[in-house]
Image 1 (cartoon, helix red, strand yellow):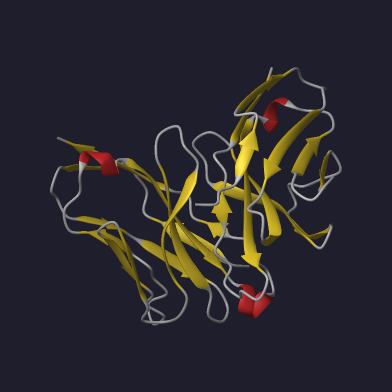
Image 2: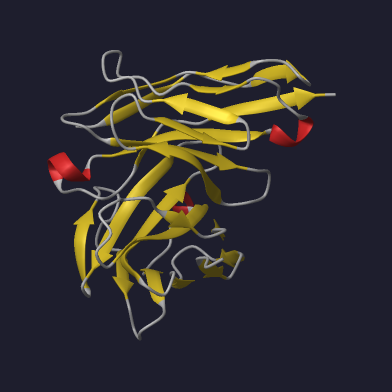
Length: 116
Length: 115
């Protein structure tokens, strides 16, 4: 069964450093997302990406964040200068095969980011 | 904006007990509704979904019915097992009304099933 894969599973970084979280969405999906879940809290939407551009972003997704689809398979989230409060589980998701209207999203296993 | 409200946990049940986790939503139009499950140390998995009023989603013995009149999508299971221990998230997507594909999640409800 196709799945969304994320790497690494756990990343520890020093405050102020840049991190890149990587995702390989399901191959025939057209819409890609990043969500985050701070420990013990709800899952929060960060950004959605379609047709090589951001289609929607939340107020959390400020200038320190960026997304990119550098090739035909990877989808990355970059955090330019990490802060302690960026520590969270980051989930990548994809949805929407061509011609399919439903919005069911498939999630990866997540990357746990710890900023120290 | 759209929102999802779930009952607070943790919910602690004995094996074979009946489970209900309440979920209500606020949204314009007719959103699609989902339950996702997060097992310990794992990511989010879609458990079931319903895309229109009165639809019943079901999977692995879990059921939820889309009730437009009460804006609810309560999750039920007749007989829980220890392996059902997880965090359950109710979510909605309101694409048809807002053009927004992103999911709005509830706060999650932790279920603990004791042998």
